[in-house]
Image (tube, helix red, strand yellow):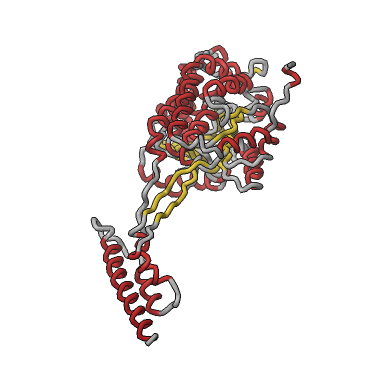
Length: 508
């Protein structure tokens, strides 16, 4: 048969098949989930070089960045999931309110069903495989949609995933806007999207038609505040690392700096020395500096430099998709650089007097995915913690919170919905099913007579007493509950006996 005549399955066909397969229950056992996660880790380990090369072909990242921040990071996340899977799958036992003191109360994590994972081009391996690990761990089936903007990586993932994962439950669906649009017409049980806010709104609207829960990992303009207490040379190294990693194409990259004029001058002076140390006299020739993903993004970024006061850098070459690491001063809030997420190697500095004015500046704009504060003053730390809102906040560094698996990574408002990493990825793809298990016993039923007709004031008073919330006693937090429960049990028994005696007399 001619391969060209083979009909490719549609998005609807794929989702229908996955749903039927998921309903078999085969994705739920620990052993199945573990095997698939082990396969995912083996995919990363066996194909480290191929994945790294695909990333380099798509983004011209330095090999160091492609390997460390994508392939190796993904392996670490998958291993962490493997090591903790059995514990994460266990139901948790919350505290029990008084009316349920004799019952079993559980929160059981269960899979949503068929998930859709839409990846992003700027980290085309990590931003697909880490959510996929969470979907697998939680017991879901999944459609994986890599970004078409990173085609070499997308094609490689399409080739590799069926070799290492059970293709009855995990399907890769490649393509551009038409294919993504077709996918979003289908009914999924969970959607996980990484990308920009504009597309995020489209995804959210499509999910809303089916009341499908979503995680939206987007971006925004992540601010940096620097005060005079901070060591500017150290600050400059940490901010420049965050800004120019992956040629500035990171959703949590520092987008602009807020500081006073003196700090700006010190920062620019330090930055000149550091950038020369990192990339040499000509960053274009440095093997440690990346490129812009394509001409469309190149033109958008370069246009932001029109009329700007460029303190460092500014050179660019469209043939090479190269934009020099650039710092811009004398930036006004109304400048083009401040109207959208830059997503490229340009760092504007906006002059602000102090922490309070910086907070006011930040709060007048959309909530950022990350907020960075450089200060040795704990009062300043607390001001930003308590009076700003952001997906995450990092004090005295940039980007590193992304790799801390014990805190959730995610946005708020325009920067996203939901969070993941470590156990939070498992939780994202799990529905916490509250479960109450009661006994069919006579003592319990004796208490239940209080809720049944005929209704009386005595019953109402006992129920109110029975369900009244009492403050915990330090060290003996269950004592008030037990006291009221014991009293309530005796009271209900007396009431029940009295009621039966009254009924027996009435019949005479």
